[in-house]
Length: 479
Image (cartoon, rainbow, N blue to C red; front, side, top):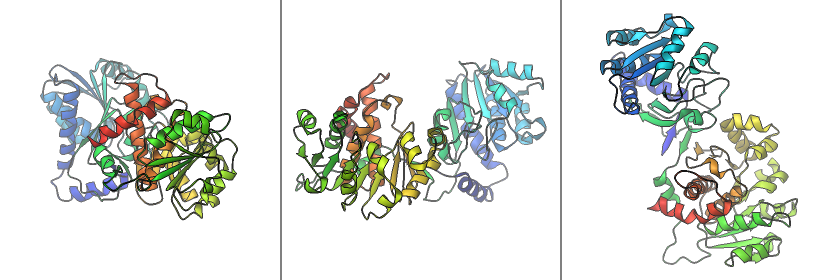
């Protein structure tokens, strides 16, 4: 599992470790790891490579300078562009010059020329304590970077917020980020994540608490959470998920939600709604009922909302049930915090950014710019677990770290994919997973299935293809 910690937590761990180490030892650990990563990105052809260091005034710049000194000793031509010449780390600068590196001139033209010539550009402008976008001088230098050059960020791309993933102004786009001691939430959460590139964690010996700010499940954790039938299991012991979805206008939403539910691990699916003929034509395994939901038979969870239209009475019926409920799409339009907070069973809301904006009374752009803050606010306001769909899917409740799904792909931005996600996640709820685990595992499998459907090079996919590949995704995880 990837765990991410706040700047305050990382700083406290660094202070504790530095008190027990010789002066400068921690920075040398970080610089050594950074230099190794840079050498690998150069294809180990360090000798003769041109490296430009963009150096700010803090320890982040010191890491870059010491790493540059190591590369210079291996034969690279290293030049440091000092953005605050009088405040550059003195020890790092001395080490670079002693190793044969040089400092770029003060003229903007000289600095831009040195950056434009580089094969590798190391971003050591701002560290994890930085706030706001880059200053104009630093942003202007980024325009000089050649498209063929590799950009490596030190700890995180300069200009992004380490704690939230927000980007308030100009920021670095890195091909890779070498981060020290622990991942930071901003490295996992968009819009900052897309600027971080490939992530590499360098262990510098920090002692970190168990409770992280954010976490991303990997195959091993998902495999442990997946429900597996025992020798005495029957369809009812495995769980029955009820699906209220579809309408005369959107019958396909019901078919897609049922498709996800059937492949999500529960033993049976009960469908309630006006699209029964379309559902049965595609999935004769489904148990159908005309409604209302409370008369459809026993279920262990409900999924309600995809393509439902203006049918609000069914939502009242489902929310009154003493089983976990997943509310998506049209179902979210009728929600108020009061209707959710009184429930004793778990509730999982699965909005995309536009739906989250409506629930919070904000603009969609605000949600996209502050995804972490938004999902936490939603969870707190509604007293529910919230799965915020998007470029990075986040799952939050009032208790544990925010879960970040690492498997998503841009090809999932297609009509109906969210209906499939609702189905598979609701099925996991029926199988006994908590709303937090069901949302996290559902998003993980959903993303893997989409990658499978899109293929290694990526290609347009349909929501039905995502559902069809869920079984393969499941096998990928357990194998």
